[in-house]
Image (cartoon, rainbow, N blue to C red; front, side, top):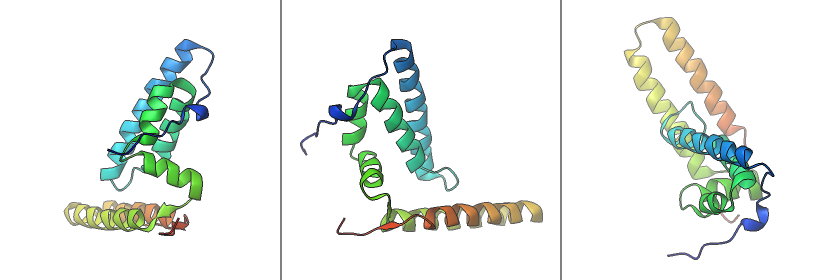
Length: 139
């Protein structure tokens, strides 16, 4: 098992306890939306994980350290903070998932305007993803 890094120095707890609890709730909801975003083409993952990190960084050293050291989510946040870029593999998976799911959905959509709307949404999301810089492998 890899050694856990301590990110406690990045945490600046909010001074009010009830606000910290609220931030944990908001961060957890954001984390759930980010997880859903991994499997759905229209819901983005990284912005929700960044929001989760921001909330946890003001609410709890324990939650923030867990998130930053998480095998699946920590790399999204660290990559974005360091490189401000999306890995090529993530872009390929995202765009492929959008194309596949939107195509299958459009086949079963009964109305032409719905199909056109889905195509426009898919193209916009793909454009949004592709406009971010691609993280180089050596980074």
